Image 1 (cartoon, rainbow, N blue to C red):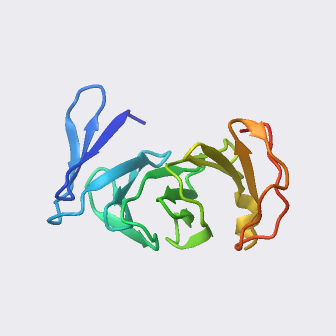
Image 2: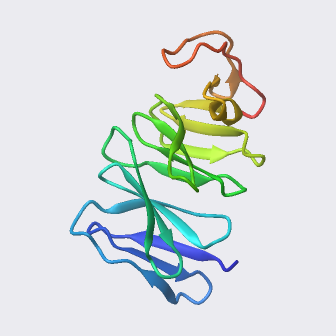
Length: 180
């Protein structure tokens, strides 16, 4: 897979360039506003996820620029971060109110955490999702989301915190792993 770089405009256009040569390989038309602000490449390099200012995540065919799917459901205006799992089956998206994990094949959300965050990253095995923002880090157990239950783990400043908070969307006990 060649190294690629993506950029977006305030008019909604997306451009993909070969990182080595600088040559543009894909350009999508703008839609008149609501710029594309966050990007993540699928591990196979043939799909680009973009997040925009109208709470939509798009999956684009690379090269070509055809929209494959539109993922909707975020509650705030700007998608803050995107990340694919290493196997490419899942995509995480974050805004100031939610973290959503999507099944890439179906385009359906498999789980939502009501955590405002600015960054997301999958563990190498794809079973956990690290999320962070506002001085806090969380570890989400994605395997339990697949079974429609979630366990949320919270860490503060890299130190383990136990049983300090409960959430309305899950009743699992809190503990932090060394991954924080």
